[in-house]
Length: 71
Ligand SMILES: [Zn+2]
Image (cartoon, rainbow, N blue to C red; front, side):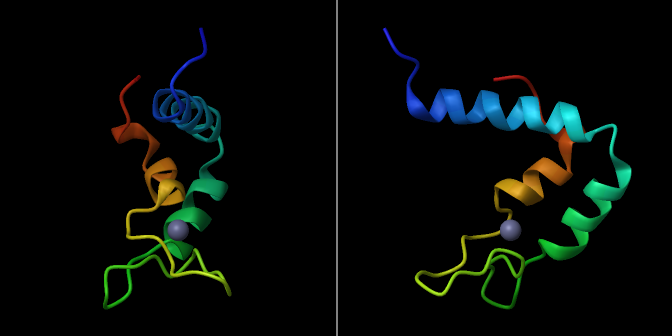
């Protein structure tokens, strides 16, 4: 049986967060770039083909890794 996609994504995000906890410069840059605009969309996640995701995006969550709990 395969792991449901949302559960797997949550686990991957948590594992990535654990990794970058030891990389303060990466976290600082992610935090600085992935901030909300006036519409509540992420300024750091831009795409020419679709709207930016609502903030906090996955990378903003990742940058605040200390707030994450294991899935
Ligand atoms: Zn973003």
